Amino acid sequence: MGKHLRFRTSSLTRGIIAVSTGGAALALPVIGATGAFAAPAQPVAVEKAATSTAVSGKAIAAQKSTPVTYSVIIGDSLSKIAREHSVDGGWKALYDDNRKAVGANPDLIHAGLKLTIGAKAADKVGTADKAESKASGSADRAEQSADRADRSDRTDTALAAQGAPAAAPAAAPAAEPTAYTDDLDGWIKESLAVMAEHGIPGSYDGIHRNIMRESSGNPMAINNWDSNAAAGIPSKGLLQVIDPTFQAYHVPGTSTDSYDPVANITAACNYAADRYGSIDNVFGAY
Image (tube, rainbow, N blue to C red; front, side):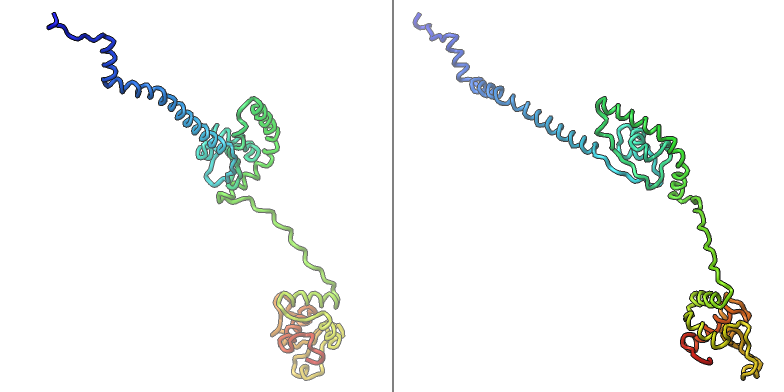
């Protein structure tokens, strides 16, 4: 019996050996550690992701809630603008936000019109906002009658911006011509006006002084005794101008009659300006 006797280990001992010497003995603490410390890491990552998403969402919401001003260009429509700017609610929402600027007809927008995009983005949550929208709609309907009155004006502006001819503005009333008295004072003043248009120098006093010396203010005065008269070209009119001089210095717009007071004064002043610099520089026969 001693020959066949062998040492028998208890199941408990084998279990201990198996656990202590096998790979499981090393793996169990690792598994335990993994289960104890790695599991909490997942909620932290999830929390960070959720926080990042929330921050991103807030940024987007803040961006959308900030209103921007858009200037309409040729070829725009409310639907096109709403589509390009991703307006919540489409063109209808854009129209509701800008109804006062657009008017009663959403199809009628003109180049240069200023639209506010996102004006009510921050006001579209809650029952209070719905009540405000209804109140705005009621006010807009009340203004539709006034919008119809100036619809034609907006139409003309839109057509003009697109190159179509707009209604011609009313012509300004023509200025009434200045009235001059038919006497020496009026003749001198009218001559001065014509002279100013043609850049001819001269003053009222200079003209008046020479007229009184030459003709005493008689427009029909004529000199039949001097050398000019002997040559057949007597001096005529208020400033005693011979016909060749009158014709050479006649000012367009005045009469061709050398006895005409205004034509005579203007031609004589034109001649005096050419020869003496101005009628004001003449103090004797010229």
